[in-house]
Length: 169
Length: 331
Image (cartoon, each protein chain N blue to C red):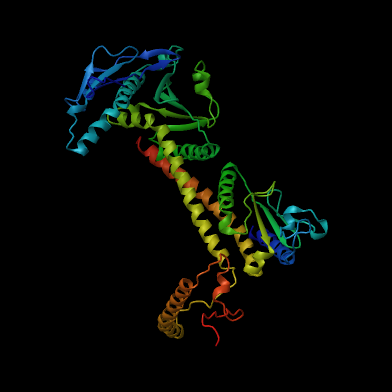
């Protein structure tokens, strides 16, 4: 089961290494403005073709690149209702604290659970390879955290139920 | 609760805990033993008013000036016990009802006359108790405001049913969950039977209502809603703590991707020596800085004309020279 995950993450890593070639590019529409072109999408010549990498129907990653910015959107696996609410809560928690992450988008792209926006300024402040490693590690951590949370919630429920029923005995 | 401006030390508290069956009150009387328990909560503070106020089962007259003021712990204890009066009355009524149902024949139980009894401990959270063959069933309609609460509660109920079916828990009441109300609750108000988290049922046998176990059974039934809500609240708090911890670790990892601006602080002998040198130099530097500030302030005070925004032109004498005007005339 680890193999498909490894392949998926390797594919995303290779795509990011190719896509994260960003340079400073002032806005062509408005003077003295510098905007991430991947968000505006006003000039098609500045945009690269978006790449969609699907692990399965439920998990996918969309990488949209442009001359000065890169957007990565992730859809995380949600097997049941509990995983669904845990994923929603956790990713919303992170998105609301996007200023602590800097590269995180406050609102995910429609159809996805979480989005990153990386600009040329981030690439100047942070090492490109380490940034890519961070995103890959982030994806692994999210999956791990949600599984652990689910197991913890079920374990807590079991303990509480046992204590409640013991009171009758 | 009623109080008068004329006598602020007297407060009247009225309560009513009626057990109903399809809107008809089945139990209105409070047992004499319960009256004794209430009176003994705080002798001198509580008086039972007879007859009670209209529409209530019990009215109490509280003498607030008799509550010991010097001892805070005792006063709090008395006030806590007074606040539990409704629970005391309801639990005594429930105990009587469970005993009565336990001693009924199975043939009476199969009768249509033995309808479920509606018990309300928390406002808008009723539960039902009815007799079946060889057992008494307590049904709790579960409702939650938040969708995430519903999901956490459902996983809890699932665990409750699984744990209850284990061999080790054979002596505990059998627990079951259903998305629809049992057919015995037909005829009950629709708003009570409208739920978003299904119905939890406990099958109480004669073993659970005999002797000292009756108190525990009654207490557990009355506080089941509070128990579930507290578990949900603690689970949410736990999830929040874990999310915060994970977020902190992710932020730390992201900060490590930055380019290093200064040399890293290594803990070895060479760097310690450098640190010591830096400490000695620091004092001299501070003195120099202070001198510069002093001369700057003196210069500011000497300049008569001050133009806002031209501060940088005043002191940078390398690229602009200020001519010296002398009052002495040339001879």
